[in-house]
Every structure is written in structure tokens, then in C-alpha cells.
Length: 136
Image (spheres, one colour):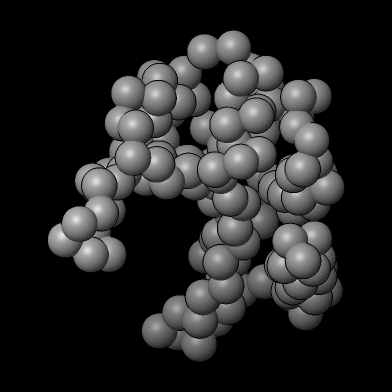
């Protein structure tokens, strides 16, 4: 798939999300994901073939609606995808910049067995809020 086509498709149909979770231990965790929901399965399978991730069916909102699927990626697949499409984006350029900064911050330096420091939590919360604001 041409990355320029993928960028346009993602600009119109995709989303970038930083999800914030409170774990059973009480620790806060953040997860960066990209996703595209669409009724045309073949194009989502192309995204999966080129950038990894997974494609899953989505439940119909109403009986008369078409079947819908969701392609989702995170981790290294997400980073490769965002870097490949970044030059062709028109609408979601700022969101991608924030997401890449979020992902690059502290990559490889955080031991997942220990809680995030107050500074790490504050920085990740800042990215979480910045991404939400960039969508307005």
C-alpha cells in the first residue's frame, strides 16, 4: 500500500488514542494505539499486511448497518506506521507528532515492574491531555 494513500485514508477514517488505565494495583498506565474502523475489510487487511496489528469485527450498531471491522496497532507496528504516513498527513499531523513524542519519551528506559515516577506520570499525563486537545 502506498503510504500517501494510507495517510489520506487514516486522516479521514483513523484515530490515535492514548488510553489511561488504573490497574488493580492502583498504578496508572498509559497505552498508545492507532485504529481505523471501516466497512471495507480488504483495505484494513492491507494495513495489517503492511504494518502488522490486528483486524477484528465490530458489533453492528443497528441491524440495518453494514458489517464493520477495526484495524488496531500499538508498539513497534504503530511507530513504523506513523513514521511511514506522517509526510502525507493533512489533518492529523499534530496528533502524530504528539503520539511519536509520547512513544519516544523514555522508550527502553522504564522497567515495567516498577511504578512510574511522579515526573514520568506528569509527562505522560501531559501527552495524554495534549492529544485530547489536538482533536478539538
